[in-house]
Length: 104
Image 1 (cartoon, rainbow, N blue to C red):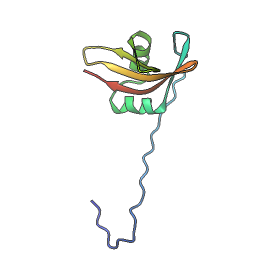
Image 2: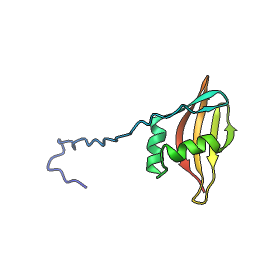
Image 3: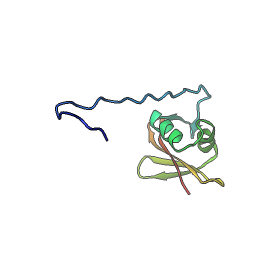
C-alpha cells in the first residue's frame, strides 16, 4: 500500500513490457484452413508454463478435436502431467486460436 500526503496526487502509472518472440515456422493447417495463434494465447501459454511453440504446435497437430457452439473448436491433448487445451474459433477460411489452458 502507498501512503499519499495529499489526495490530489495520483499514483504514477506502471507499465509492464513483455518481449514475445515470433517463431517463423511452417504454417499449420486443419481441414484445409490455416491456424492463427493470437498474442493473447501466447501470453496465456507462457503464464501457465506451457512451452510455446513446441507443446502448442504438438497439440494442434496431434490432439483430439471437439467442436462446440456454432463456430467454436477445441484441440485437446492429454499427457501424464495433465492436458493442454487450445480454444479457438472458426472464421471463414481460417481458425483463430484465442486462448490456451491447462486441464486435469
